[in-house]
Length: 299
Length: 184
Image 1: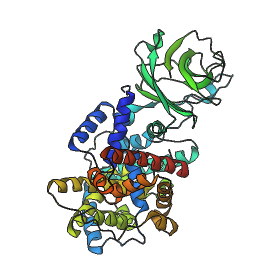
Image 2: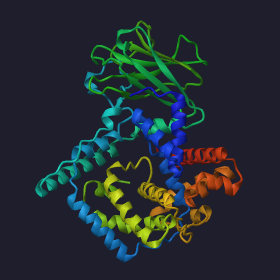
Image 3: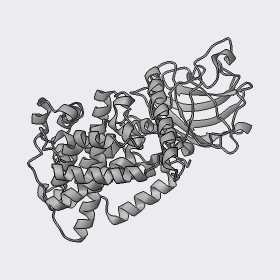
Image 4: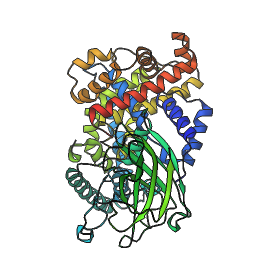
């Protein structure tokens, strides 16, 4: 993950809006492709979906059905394509998992949580991993049936999983949406001298109106969960600096790499001035001694 | 929408029986969009076939939290049609701009619309909340398929203003849709 400068994000929104209405020039298309190559986490369909919704609003109903001759032609073409297509359930699983990460899912069994129970750590989303899909492989028809059955099973499981979740969102899309709001603030984290952050970079976006935000980190050291965790503190101009708002605890898994962490402010934040990440004991603390400060972002 | 009711989820796993359902449910929508943004009926027919092949390949990317299946399919259709428009522009051909399947969004927002009802109703509500000039620019750009330069010429607005209205209008539509639909 690269930390995206604000001017780049502004330019991306311009280019994505132009793309959504079909107004990208050749040069703009090249610029957009280059920016997406550099910052793949900014690739989002939200403006294309908005343009499609606008178009739908103007469609007059009842719609004229597809002419039968054309429907037959398309059906035949798709059937040919379907016969050639092999579904890789791993790719499907990755695609589904990438867009259904729980905002506040537990990262370890409840039995391992400390007695002084605090909110479970949010699951950081590995941005790079979420975008990786394995290339499709050629399989025999029999194998295809097996994969398809496995995929159906997975989809049913995913549906059940979804039904059990009340707070499921595609986080990268949610971050992009927040960034488009007029009150959203965004700033970069600076790494302090703590050993956990020597190679770290990151940034934060926060909407006071929605009381929601996200942090992105690259290079923040993985934490052994039974020894220590990261905890976010939000300094509010309306609050005494001795009592910053608890923004939630989170873990960095060694396998995840770049991460996107949803902020879970425990009380309302009126006017944030600083976002500070400290290192704390498992489960987090109510008041930080600020003995180990990893990252700091000033508004 | 439960995953098992989703035609795109079935397409995503290569369920051949989903083809017919997909064509039945969304064929009319794609046909209307294709005729709108194609220079001839035969070109529109070719576009429809390409669009459904794109839908077949992209179905696993459908995210029900980001919009309805109809919106997702309209998005895929628009992308393909815009690509075709751009290559036609290089050949100096003009789209049909068939208007018979398009109407004022206020009128349609009140009418029963079956498969498209919820999404189109929400979008119409969002459009009603736009500033008049944002709405005008979006209608010309999205529905009429005009370029920013053509819109500037037609409305007398500076080019930069046209671009800003389009961008802010889309962001506003998205914001309203998220608020109304409870989406992320």
